Length: 244
Ligand SMILES: NC(=O)c1ccc[n+]([C@@H]2O[C@H](COP(=O)([O-])OP(=O)(O)OC[C@H]3O[C@@H](n4cnc5c(N)ncnc54)[C@H](OP(=O)(O)O)[C@@H]3O)[C@@H](O)[C@H]2O)c1
Image (cartoon, rainbow, N blue to C red; front, top):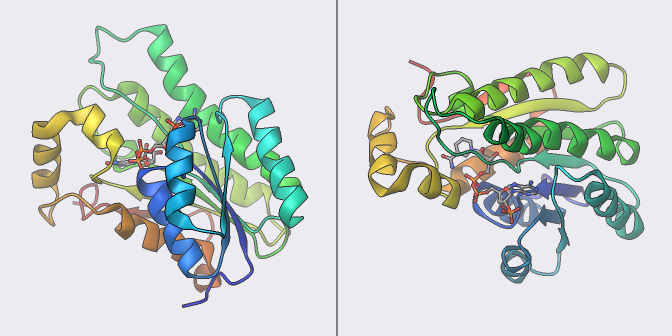
């Protein structure tokens, strides 16, 4: 399939996990992809894996100057931008009673503030036919014990697509949320441990965790004109976890 031929994409958190899998799929479908994240070794491994149609920019989504460098690099090499997959995210569990201000600030700085500025700073490069995809989570819908800050941050992300679909009226740019459930990535391993991951998979009607490529495939659909009449939507790719 060449659904993304000649399209330029930015994927935050594109060095690992869901972002890397999406980058791979976007490139297979014809796109040129900039991956963005903080760990240079993850970016280097990503570019080595993704090949000549990938570039990497090092930085944090919660640092506005880093985002300016990202979009300056996109503008210098490609001129314009078609797809933003605001996917960088983080979260660790802390039960109610032990939550700290720092924990909330860290989570919201990345997942909410980072998502907002990733998109706001991309807009000057985007035009009609553009697609914005935000990574939400099944945790934004369900109650997940221990995940007060993370779940609240992902519920906030879900609203961003609703608000932006309104604000982007007339531009031809669409904004949707892709909400994974249990997906086998570093983040899931760190947040849940081996036993927690098994339990997370078992809670899912499909009785397993997703492979990141299964999320990347839906990101490619949302990036492409196959989803041309979708905006403000949340697409759950969660094996049914948050749908029962
Ligand atoms: N795995 C799951 O079960 C699951 C379920 C629902 C939703 N999600 C969401 O899916 C998205 C991707 O996560 P993943 O599961 O693929 O885990 P992952 O492999 O840990 O990916 C997270 C990515 O985000 C990047 N990142 C984190 N903080 C960042 C920051 N401040 N600035 C720039 N990049 C940052 C990380 O790179 P650096 O650390 O190098 O910056 C990493 O590449 C996240 O938004 C997560 O909340 C995951």
